Image 1 (cartoon, protein in one colour):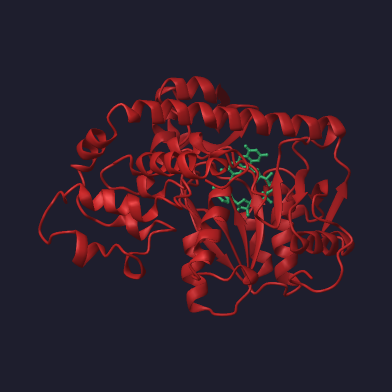
Image 2: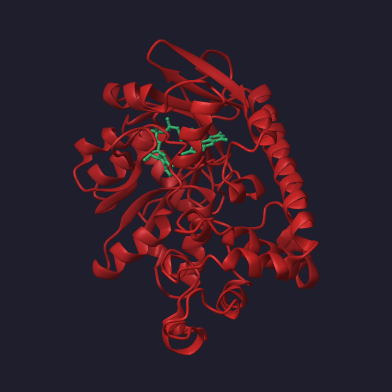
Length: 391
Ligand SMILES: Cc1cc2nc3c(=O)[nH]c(=O)nc-3n(C[C@H](O)[C@H](O)[C@H](O)COP(=O)(O)OP(=O)(O)OC[C@H]3O[C@@H](n4cnc5c(N)ncnc54)[C@H](O)[C@@H]3O)c2cc1C
């Protein structure tokens, strides 16, 4: 039985092209607007009490978490922000801690889903109260990097850019006076492009969510106008069936060629992720401990890496940052502080990259903890290091 009761006439494993019936959503949506329509439908029907999504802050580089309880406001959250490096999982955890029993629908990338599952294992969140609308994710570009890349590689003032998108392997910008696209491979070979944890990610289609939505596989006259939706759970099947029945969404069978292409692109992205793992980890393995010691010598002990990590909970675990491991007044802390933290999270680091992204001193913390996680998986649970598994 799904979250909503009733027997779904759509089933897990189904795949459809879907598009919104709402003209306002269609105008703002990334492609078919299925994600925003499903969130709106869930709120209108009181299937959930609130929605957590991502909205535009000051500009296109500024993605902010948004809590919506009025369905009319959901259209403002439509569209994809590729500089949105935020992790919604911890936002949801904090919100739900204070609003016990509330049902919440969320837009989630692969890292959000993995983090939510880790939070659920630690009894920090109840997945039964969540409806997860997944979005495929090829990766995000850090806002600082995006501005630098647009200035240096595109030769464009980043403040004149009003739209960015990632399409057919290119990072594309629209700005006052034109538009330009550059292949992501070329950008990344030149030291620009996606965050390093995103490059190493093998989890592109979030099948642990209730629905996984994306643009891969939509071809023909629906290209750019429909969302590809894969049904990943009974809850997702039920929501989709009801939304279609009540006219919030229209659907059609995917083009078989599109299906094949989607599989191929996913496979190619996973291979690319493996290439980056090899490249990053091999370089690191030449002097792992020396590199950790050198890089962490910049640490100012702000504890942002602990605060923002979805799997690091010092007060409930073995590591107690303030009183056990770190000597008061010692900056930088002894490298053992970082090594203990890596040990504490090494069985469950989800490679979300928050520790690194939010590190005030730009220490490549995610690379270290991900390397340790993958190496441990390969040694003791080899299947966990393979695509389809969640790190
Ligand atoms: C960073 C990123 C990378 C993506 N890469 C791919 C890809 O490689 N292949 C693919 O098939 N699809 C990818 N997608 C998904 C695709 O862009 C669309 O989101 C998806 O097809 C749904 O389209 P829609 O019109 O139904 O969504 P809409 O109705 O426009 O809704 C989009 C939803 O995404 C949320 N959102 C926007 N930015 C972010 C963010 N940074 N993090 C989390 N949620 C966000 C919005 O709040 C909204 O709820 C990516 C999405 C993002 C955010």
